[in-house]
Amino acid sequence: MGYLFVTEGMADPSITATDSTLLKAKGSAVWHKSSMEKGEVPCPGIDTDARWGYSHTKGWVFGYKLHLTSTTGDLIVPLTADVTTANVPDNQMYVSLTSESPSVFSLLLTCYMAADPGYDDKKLYEYSKKTLGIDLVCPVERYESTSKKRLEIVCFYESVLGQSIYNRRGISIEPLIEHIKSVFRIDPLPVRGFHKVSAIVLLSILLYQIMVYYNCKKNKSNPKSIKYMLGTI
Image (cartoon, rainbow, N blue to C red; front, side):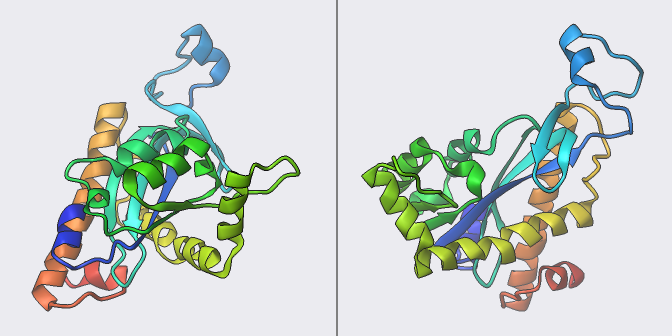
């Protein structure tokens, strides 16, 4: 669907964004790490596929993680998505999210990818540039021992253009994720088990894409309001 949005000219992929969000496992019972290591399930109702993950906004969460890429222009729409347990780092999912086939990023229309500090990884900068032909833009600190190559990345991020690209995250993928979670009620999750969780979360993303696509076709316009797009169906 993401590929369709771009090839039909509905969405502008020149500046994209990637992010993730933690999704709380179903029920109030959690599997503490001490019991997990011993292989002991202290009470019924625990999702034994779920794992612990940490975010600066939510703290520690027992559950899963949705990984997403999206456009950042007038039409903000998911491009690719995947689901993992909550303990999987964001940078480990970047390659798979951008190499799906057919891939939006293989069209050579994307120039930049905005991401949070979790994607600050030398290998990802190189992969973005050499394989995708884009610049990965995320917060990166400079140190006294910062290499010349990394310093170039720092300088671009701190530039007016770099800040403009990075700030698009706050008005695109971040509210998009929260809206999808709210509309489809997937946080906390309504099911247990990795396969069921993955299915319902990815189906939610697909349904959202279909609704947006239908709305664009029906109204022959690209309304900016995500809520409006859902409300017209």
